[in-house]
Length: 565
Image (cartoon, rainbow, N blue to C red; front, side, top):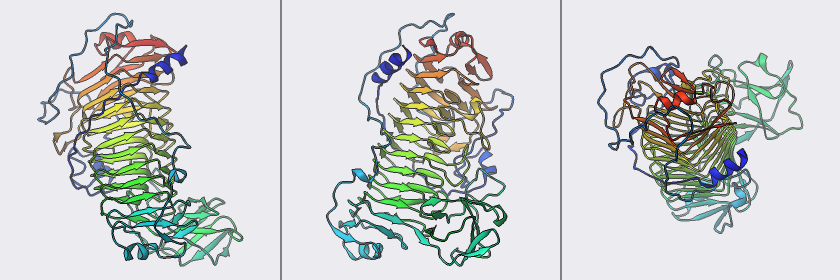
């Protein structure tokens, strides 16, 4: 019966897309996590927009209401409380089609199509050939392994494509190994030592920022912090001695080290990148192996095993990213910064953060967007070691629609210090069960959907099931941004199915001292809650735990339905 009910709900999913132009501002990313606790705008001091304030709130005291510019339209008044959890009729809305979600086999070079143009063969200098031809040229990479030692910088309206699954690699072979005790060592391949950036899960060793990765027969090795820790399947890079140590005999195996930082990057408009496998680039934290400019189309590529971000959109207005496999990158699958009206659709984004970046609270995982707008729709965002989809710091008009967001270690969706968001028709399940540094199970730690100090956000018609928590609404003191003080205002949570049947799962609101939320600013209406028991305290309102009946009596969802699992 429950399966039929869920199928009916999904079949009736709704989509009304609202897109607004973002506030675009320059941001210098930095690495000091302590500064992220400041009450000023984290971007003003160049701090990463990815860290939460202290999880345990101070005692709540009524502050003076801060001035802020927020969307002017107020939500409807909270419906009157009911003394029983039996529902009345839910409100009707207009149905609209959604983009079908991608599955594992729906993306990658198999969908690239033919290529006709100037052929680039393995062994040729791709950038030299691209540079020799005029804007608008199509370049077809022949089958095989292309070692990219110089970043390819396409001109306007250029196409870089392959119909033959060409592989662009940023790695170099490592040869000349010698036995050294229980390990094997090669010297002379590393660059000079460089400074740390980023935040690591292991904040004592702090080695996630080191860019050069080692692969044996294509298998990614785990970096360790000392030669003494090296064992089979791992390596140690000693930058001072310019030596790399392996734990297994490399004889008879192909050993490579990522070296080139970026495969493709340009500010030119209208570039198409299609059908390429892009792997083993030694990109710095927050930098991409493929960096898009404005109006690009990035389609049917396999972007994998690069050190930091797979695909990065920087000032890339109106770029379209579709049907790509973006997987197993060291930090993040896809990043978007200062890019308006970008479309990210029908990609498979999975297994990212392989190099140990902070899972709970740095920009690791599936997708991270900052100071941007556009649509993220129809993607499969699965099993990333971090947040599935994260809109953070002055995203404006972001639409997150029709995605499958499954099994990510932190929040399924986090919408943080941003505004005018629509989160609709997504399937969000099994997220938030990471157990590393900063992880937890309270509403302060997030859940399937986490709305953090944002305004004008609608969460509707999603199926939110089996996450560490359901829908968590957080009001924090977060300083100011492009449109004034960051505040939690005008939040609508309606028409969702929210399943909470185990552990400490709950749905509700939390707030810091000094982050008061006026009545009527957070509205739950017409949701379906699937519970293990009607008497279970699966709800919370600013520190008070509530049963289904208490949730209704608090005036939070008079139109809601409460169903037993």
